[in-house]
Image (cartoon, rainbow, N blue to C red):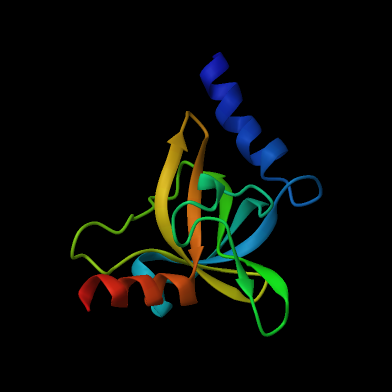
Length: 135
């Protein structure tokens, strides 16, 4: 077995082991409900991109409840899942349901031999921003 083979095998047995690092999430390729798959993901919700500089990256203040709401999160999943990123006028993007909330793929940040890091944005924020661009 080569080192590459061992790294790929470790992806499922070590990093994507629900007893250690990962949890089950629902994945809807291209947002299609009929294509629902339950996959394993390492959810890194405390990792926030952009230092709050870009809408949808980071946290926003909910003035009514005086609390901060997370608007983005990072997940790491197996490279075997073909993630679709939104491009230009293409509104079709992969959707995830994590802990009862809906998240859209913003972009894939990194890929290696076994895993990929995917930046997600909260569904409400994604819809609001797309409306601003069209408006």
